[in-house]
Image (cartoon, rainbow, N blue to C red):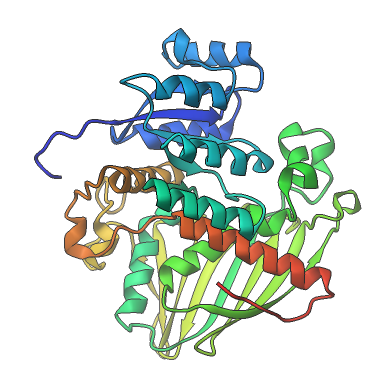
Length: 388
């Protein structure tokens, strides 16, 4: 790490209050490396609950706010006001909160989807560029180290020419209408809160972004999507979808997005198939990458080992053999967000390549992909041109 002392970025949260699993992982990740310091929050739609929760976190009483607009306005008047804000609220609020944060010259870390439409995403992108502010999107699985190993292997030509990409995030926890008893699930299947899709945006965009990290040179040319509501009460939102994509180099990809894969815990897998070899990563075994060369025994590459490419070892926290999980992956992303915000790349990142994190472009592409999938499915599963 560089020798100069780095001051933590003063940070506030919108949403993520008591009982929020996603709020807890945001705080655990952001605070782990002393990159961020939580100093303010608008944690709950109920101001009293929000203030009580802020007190539990050790915040000054006057810096737990009733809503995000009050927080942004008050903090802007302080010499020690927040420099960045994280958004951990339902989907339908993301655009307005992100826009307001940028208008107050704050950096933003936003839950996905960034917003509902490409037009909204492009507006946020233009605003972030005009204000010179970073927007990070929490595609948290992309912080696992073996994703960087996969990216380096493709770049080095270890797989040969890329031919086929198989992506899936297909769990089984919503095979029944669990939303009838679970408010935290209910909003995800309501178009007013979730937007134009359920599983396409909720789970499908995760492996899609990972594929974009591993295969930055491939661009989607066109796609075709079909989607179903197997739990009928969820219509018009889908709980299962299959997307077929063609890339500009002639390669093809499939994306299976599902919440009704009965018996599956997570089912997020990324398989990249080249002319010489294939690799496969499974988020339930995130410390391993399967490497399969045609005609040779399968190799299982392990996190933290010296035989990996340097890019895959930048974020090592403990030696090989010790399992790391989702909290470490999120912490890796928050550290990268912090480097991007502060301009301090540290950890010799400049020696091994660019600082890779899901930024405003990743958020925009996720929204574009969902929009095109919905357009294709609602037209009867037809091919649609994919423009970026």
